[in-house]
Image 1: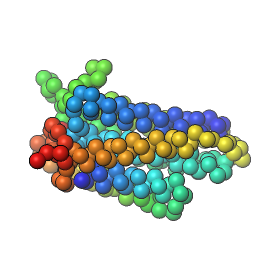
Image 2: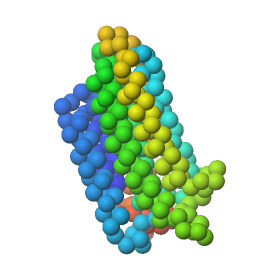
Image 3: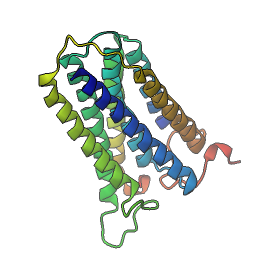
Image 4: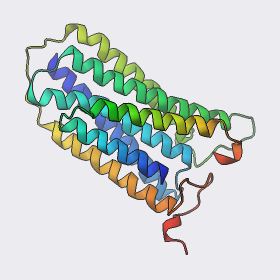
Length: 51
Length: 187
């Protein structure tokens, strides 16, 4: 479900972007931070958790 | 120059949509559901497309400016760096001699290696766009009707991936590290 959440965030960012909403860049940065945190979490857990 | 930028941004989005479609086709034809890192790379590819889509959106109502190119390229570069980090992580997981890698290779390289090449190419393309903005004529507005079709294609591929990942993860927070099926349809 976490990946679905990221994709929904991408869609929300795109929606804000296409409508010219002021939240477009904050939403993009929020997505970047959340995805980065998830990647870092994956990198710092034992190898059995990722392929 | 404005027309060239819109053409480049459109091609950029379509290349990313095609890469995502190819990965999607690979998932169903080869019968290999994507692993967590593969899904993260797909998400980074989607985020890369937001950069050129930003430029297309800004050029819809007025002339494209160097500021728009700067923001759009920045979005694409940050997303590509994120994706390259994930791809490198997966390449390094399988770098030891004798390791068969994850999934079926395509043209001799695994999909995560292709993804790394795609992310590096995206960074290079965005860098070229930033340099080229020095010659951008900001008063020249171009009617670009392909933008909405391109945006629709992007939305379709993101929604398709969203449905696929929901089917794959079922009601679990994360995906299994070596997925073999779609947990939503399993008893």
